[in-house]
Image (cartoon, rainbow, N blue to C red; front, side, top):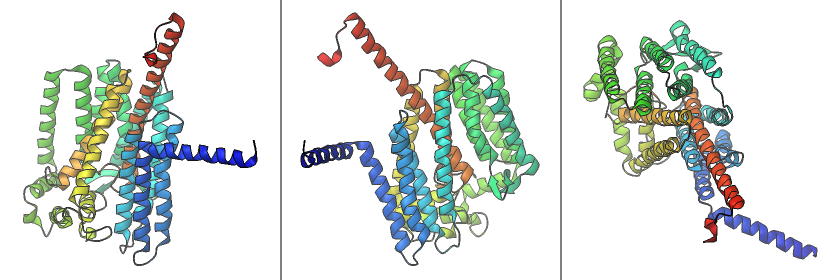
Length: 442
């Protein structure tokens, strides 16, 4: 074959491969996401004073989306829709934080991009743990002891923020141990519940809740409690004890209201934020005004006044999104969370091992409860708590923890795909051995 014919044949093969890639829905979705964030960071960087870090983010953020959504799944089966949604939300948080950095003298957007990279590594580690560790008997005890030590650290060396003593400072970096323990809690619940051992997980969950109450971190305590109670009901089906647990949770909420002044203040603000507009209700009012001022289509990326909201970068970042992108975009973000939750529930339902089903469902419930708590608080459906919006709010431990939870779900999805592939190979082997008819022949 001549060189010209060979080059034409190679060109045709490349064109066919490119056409096939363009027809793939996963590649089209990821390409649209990468183009969206590349254009957004580029436009913001060219608006007003030119900033070099914006050009870097315009290249790095789409690259991280590609790596986490398209490149990593080459090495193991993956649910790319789940990965795409999680990575879109992470990149959205980086974009919004970077936009609000302009003129504020902060660098939260760049820091969040670094946390995003660490979160991808945490997700990969959790995927590999679920895929390849078969016997957790010894490791789960190590995880339990280490998690218990982390939970009590804030009581000894913690710092107070917004009424809760749930942060520790190590080397100039603030960490929230309760965020790091979320994945450990699911592994412990999954291991002992799948073996019908009640007391180990009950004692550990009770210890975590008591520690969170002492730290006055009631938002995280709510997430822990709701996740544990849901998994208990899902694994036992015991409605009387589940109802008793719900009543106990309501009683704990009333007790927390009577014991902690900052909880009483938040409930009062929830009832009528305008009454406390000039003091403690200022943030709630400004968040509601930001959502309203955005209208259906938003005031535009980089416009508006997001920094008038005191804690716009964590508690009220959903209000900033609605202001700049519009209420319709905010609804689409909520739809993404719903799809993520439905996808996680489907993966848990398809698991063949009870341990895998419990950790996948627990991670899904944990993300769902946290999303409802923070977005419901910003929209004044429930009292505002100090939890973060999953994947989007500023915070290293929160983002890494959420990506770790996605890693647990994705690890279970990967094992499910391996099980299906094994079943397919067994069925083909039986057809070849016994001469059974093949469905592909009909």
